[in-house]
Image (cartoon, rainbow, N blue to C red; front, side):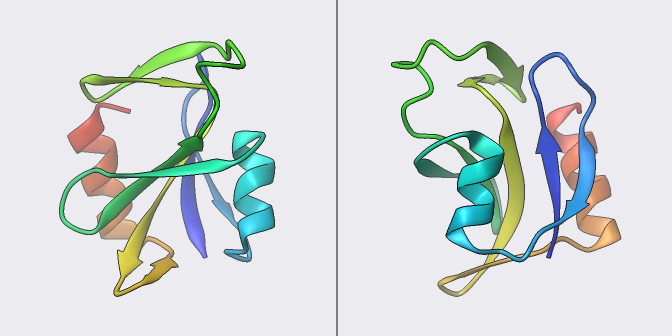
Length: 95
């Protein structure tokens, strides 16, 4: 599945992952927390980012700790993004 990864102080990047819990945990560096952005877009971050004192960054109008990934939900599943959806997210969050 195609996702956006946003690292602290680095431009976003587009990557393909298998969509497993393990692949998402590797990106965020620990347990995942899922935050609904708008429509069906989801931001996945490290659940313990603040406790671990990970570097903070602003995405949209919110502050997150550590690297995050952005994908989409389809029912109860997490799925990849289309090119149009990537453009919408980049513009909507000011990435």
